[in-house]
Length: 229
Image (cartoon, rainbow, N blue to C red; front, side, top):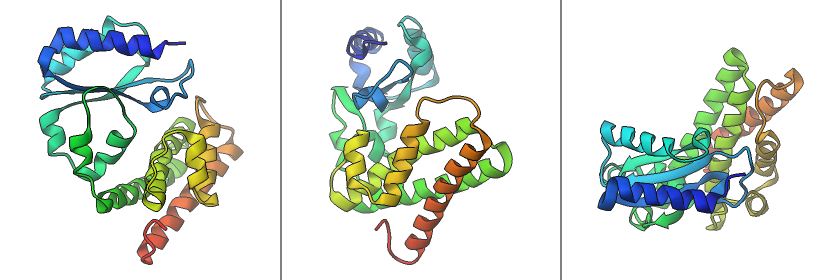
């Protein structure tokens, strides 16, 4: 399995050599950032430069080509200027779920209000409902469903934060902050984690039905004025 500390140190050195003082932030997200990485985990690096243009993206891609585990690298690349004008509701997960190695995201985090987090949850749940329904009707694809459950885990973190004021990126502590219905979604997310390819038809239907019903119920409660409670 990738030694993530060593790999990130290599990435930091390459970024400094390539971009110098233009590198504003480097961090790590995902399962490796949570200390839950496995041999199948992607490497979710967060790289923020002073600005980003197409040539910068090509240079960064070439830089990654020089590192091991290229096929596992993904993550988020952006310019500081762009992030300073980003939708605050879309910054919540980035700021809360990223482990900093170089720099800090505090100036972005300070822009995020409670109403921004509520909007992040609202958007997340509505998107899950729409894509889950679409997948049930059209693609009927197990990997799409796995992706939806992965996204649902981020929405659950925001819901838990609104209710408790605590942000838990790791699955076990997060589960302790959730209501039973939400905990079931998190459990299914863990069950689907790491799998690939088609699911048996009964499993696909069961996982889809539970996710869709949860999202529909949340939307109905929001419409009734209950918010994320």
